[in-house]
Image (cartoon, rainbow, N blue to C red; front, side, top):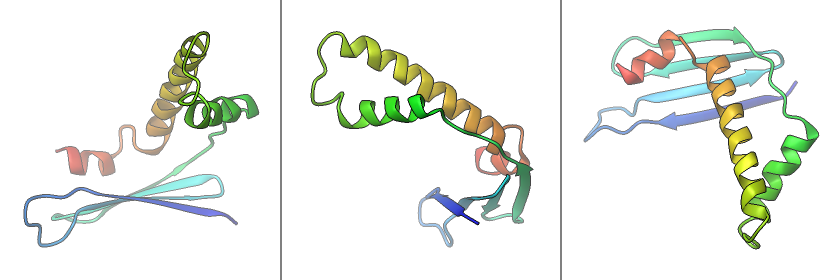
Length: 108
């Protein structure tokens, strides 16, 4: 079973401890945990997200090839890929943190 962990630290001036947002993915669920000054907040949700093979290739092209040859028509193609990456990012946020008490901890 594959597990993925993403941790983001939010630094305050001279913190006694570093507030941490931890996101863990396992099988068909994702767990978000906020550890900071207040009580620990944690939430587990169902998770289902996939990119198509074409999305994956487009993102690879954008990150690896576009910067090397950024002349027409590639800026037009890049704009389409950027739009898709934005959509995917919003969908990921919605599934993982959207409306969650865990997300409201660092933003409150």
